[in-house]
Image (cartoon, rainbow, N blue to C red):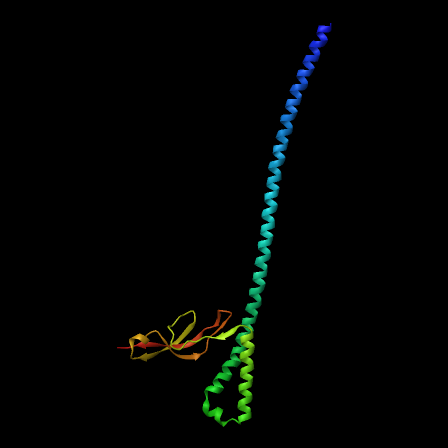
Length: 181
């Protein structure tokens, strides 16, 4: 009988060894599955965080662009006033008829307006003598010229163009030289 007891213990030990090996294998599989899920969650979280950071940057950029757009609209309205001053000062006969104090007052007002526009990044563009560029200029006619090298060059500026922080907010209205042989 003792032999039977030893045989049973050997069998139980072998079963425990088999169970332990199976348990270890099972635990290792579960661990591997957990590690895979952890990496998926970590990767997903990192992507979501990066998307959030990018969305925040995009939102800030859009806000900045909106503010610039709103400022550009207001600047365009002020440019109409600047154009009125330019027309006043271009008409020398009318300017000469004005009282000296009034003329100085208009010059001071125009100076203030120019300073306000400059403070907002608005600068006039130079056009006369430059090659016509449809990004900077809007052609409203042609001027006959006698030199081929002036063909396509801005000869007259009917309305000044302006940039705001290096972006064109109003193109110049110009007449372009056209060579006729």
